Image (cartoon, rainbow, N blue to C red):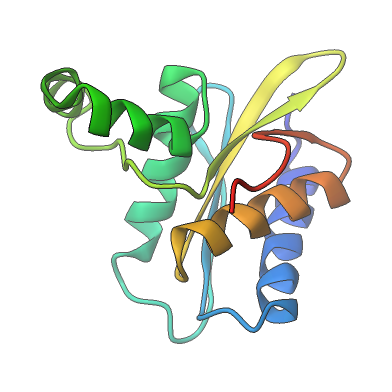
Length: 145
């Protein structure tokens, strides 16, 4: 189970990592394993659509069972499938890196974190670093870029 405390700590760790990297203002969404929002934080200066993007990255990762980097890969390789998926998901899936699955050894997938605001690679790196900081196993485990 993903507790509120862990989700809150994770979201704050994402923002700290973003500041450490001197990123653009970030938005972070933490969802439980059922895709329900637990925490949503948007830094001053982050665009008003960033919460939807961050949530879409996390929601798509949960729905498909792999990171939003993988979702982007599927969208590029099989565009007809992704178009159908977008319709089935009512537009909630966002195909860009920054959505990371969260696991624990005891419970498996307990949720996902989505980050938006900087380049997708920076978003993903902040999510992964934060997950490791709070003791969760992210998927992917390391940023690709």
